Image 1 (cartoon, one colour):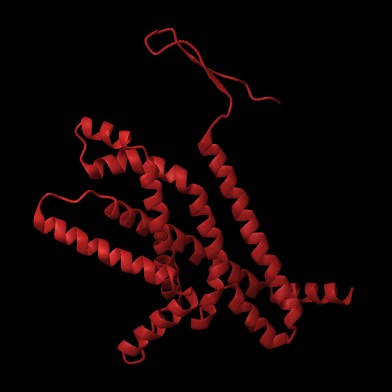
Image 2 (tube, helix red, strand yellow):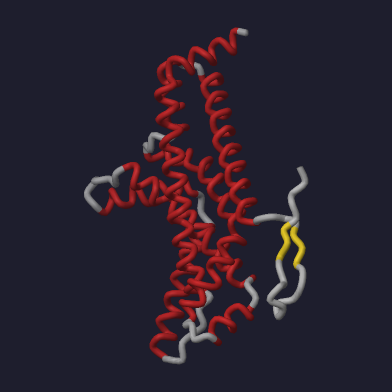
Amino acid sequence: MTFFIQIWEILKEFYPFLLKGIGMTLLISLIGTVAGLVIGLLTGIIRTTPFSKNKLLRVIHKIVNGIIAVYIEIFRGTPMMVQAMVIFWGYAFMNDGQTLPLIPAGIFIVSINTGAYMAEIVRGGIISIDKGQFEGAYSVGMTHWQAMLYVVVPQVMRNILPSVSNEFVINIKDTSVLNVIGVAELYFMAGKIIYINLEIFQTYTIVCVLYFIMTFSVTRILRLFEKKLNGRENYTICGSQSDPAAEIHIKEEAK
């Protein structure tokens, strides 16, 4: 019972620290995931765009593809903790010791790291779309970018949603590495609490449970969202498209 009493006392005394850490963790992971998705969409579209017949544009496209490939390999091949140290202290090294603001720095680090993974996820999603979708868009006069924007990307977003959700959950946990540059996320706040009360095991037990609650809740919410996008599972198509009386009858879901 003593252990649980200690847990309760820590929660009662230090809940403002824990709430601040949870808020910072969710803020950075959410913005970082959304920004990473935008980076992934842009890089994925560029990498799957056909080469132009214009020689200059072809050369520029190849250079951009090369830069994107290097970016992806570097940020997928190195730990986020090392990236955080290099970016944060590298900026200070080049600016006479002046460091980046902590919260924007944390968001930037998570965003570009996530973008490297999203780039491959989006590229795979685009490749998985049937070529007939592109051909149909081109046949009605759309450019490649219009076909991407109005035809392909909406389908890609639906297909990659589980992967995007997974990246969000990973980012909730990986924001803990930002404590090395002083970002006041949940793990950093745990360190502050331990510095005050010296109760290491009890404090980290609370933090472990809080991380689990966050990831579990986010996973369940995103799964509900995925089910909404999938629509009804049971339906029967009756008649033909050439018959004006043809209708789609949706079966009532079993109660």
